Length: 360
Image (cartoon, rainbow, N blue to C red; front, side, top):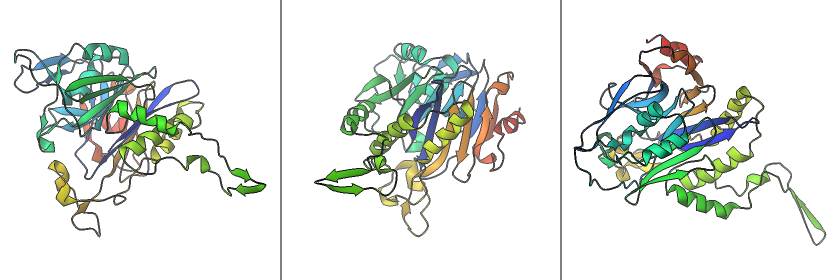
């Protein structure tokens, strides 16, 4: 349920890729939020926390009841700071011991807060240590307590992970730029110690007692990579592909390379299926897999590629073969919020920026 990674070109410019997996599609909206946009976040019975956008940003968001209240799932701001929300089923945030007169940020609003207020990972890291944040019940997810964690990257290539686990806020520097889902991020880093043998160099021959054994094909270097679509397996594969893929010479080649990297995390419907009787919350409403009544399947509902320094997002939904491009720079001159459902960007419409501008 989501793979996020950073890839770097020959000039060390960063590019972020992510997939989003669910057993059903949702009404995602591509939205531009201009500088000066007013936001408000409320956690439990605390007074609302107001904040005004210092930077314009482009995001894929979900309406919380209506388009008047959009929650950011993926996005980038004018400074090249990105935000990704990924599933984290074992979320356990701090207890609410604060007086209700204290303004508190609801964790579900972290995307809007991060992208509207900050220009670097360092700024986010400093600010979040001083801003109280609480996980809250998400009605659309059966009352689950904000079951997500968050990956943040900036234009320098710095990366951060924010998790709410074991009753605490955990903020980690992310030296690898990779995130999937549970267990905790620190566990994934420890698990990489089991893969110190990984290399992209094919070892295609072996001689034992004068007998030579020869691999007749290329690709043997990847034989020990985890094959499953679990978060643990995907984390290791994401580190491997992000690290060993050839470093592109320019931005155009880098985005193409990143698209090939992300193809390794693209899940068709039906590859793994789960009984509806064990699903909870919104997952229980997922459609059946053809030929398997009573079973649903997680699949890649959309994939995004982000050029952090040029401010471009490329999006591809499950029903499309090609990406739609969104360029943040032409939008920054506008003071109007612009939004259009992701489903409206049809295959063959490569220029999403123009479609978004037409809504202004």
